[in-house]
Image (cartoon, rainbow, N blue to C red):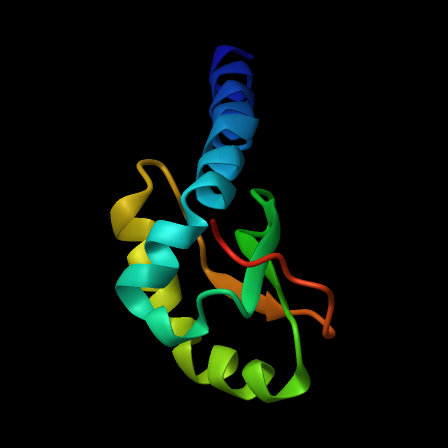
Length: 102
């Protein structure tokens, strides 16, 4: 019983919102490091810690292709820059209104 309880707590810690919040909060820095040309055209909108998936919206369809090509670099940069991040996949969402960075 003790082992199962310990394993359950470990899974809970992996899903803590702090990691997901940090991934989203630091997306601009990750973007600048891995694909600066996308700045102002894409925005991280969600991070699902259960599936290790980061959802990213683009402002126009053309940036979706560039985002897909840049996904491996973005994933590596997120995992290197955000402590505890375990981003494994990037989901490119349909075009949406993206606010430019200040």
